[in-house]
Image 1 (cartoon, one colour):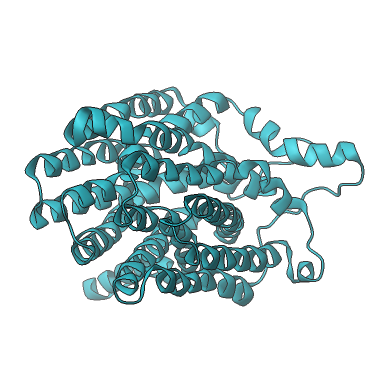
Image 2 (cartoon, rainbow, N blue to C red):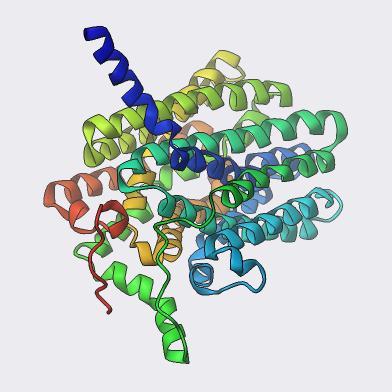
Length: 441
């Protein structure tokens, strides 16, 4: 009797991960993660190995700011019906278009030579950012609209699994191929990572929870379609404080993460060592963190699990201060990367679930674009404009200690929001079983 009960409990725990919506979130995550790697750690390594100075290398992280600007064209993905492809559905048609653009942009980045023409490399990286940001808009909207409310925690976990596999897989493939066939061949091989999301959309079709916006006819209606998603969000109780939290909660973490490859290069780690310890150990540690995050979200609830995530992500930066102080050490690198990725995996699940629940189902693409863009814009801008100079002036140890201190305001703010009830008051219809009536009807 007890054996049968335990078997059912085990199956009940595993089953949500095998539902088609959760599996779809995984494959969407694979494709979402790889453009980030192409203009992030992979490009940083490529530029550093080509002898580009630190200030210029960290300035390339400004290409990520394109992701933060996606909120300005997300409304197009919500409302513009594509000719020909549009008959396949709003989300499916945009998934195919955006995926094709990403593949073309990555191929273009493959063909530039940073040491010969830095300007062309900047343009190519920005184009990958534009295409990748558009791809992200569609992927996020498709994921949120495909997942049912009870699947948000599991689906966010599966999406993070996929994101890490896509990011780490593309990054590792690029390192291995570049060592043997050059960076151009490496980038061309990685372009294929756009296919999982495109094939998932073709297989599943248009999301059942997709809500078409109201028909737009005149200029006023078009303007309403642009500002409507933001008006709906900011009319909620506590919306401005929620936005402030989104802006500041990851400043320290983003500032630290975008400089790790510079640290590894200065400590003398080879490409193979980076592939093993950073990509390899980081990959498995991240998956462990995602698993812990899924369990924590289910057992602790949203507010407590998010608060724990914020603390872990802040403290994890100190491990890189320790690595910088210790010098070239494979064990030290494995420990720092392991801690960082467990914290990031855990945080990715619970924070993404929270952000997803903030969306109104009629404006999923636009509102999640606003949320995800705001989540990293401050950290990315600070990295691109000051990180290189800060590292050169204060050294890596003090730099990573500073990033930990910068994480404290987000922790305190979310704790206060939880105690005051603002976290619950600002929730959107994506986190509800039965959405509210249209307030604009």
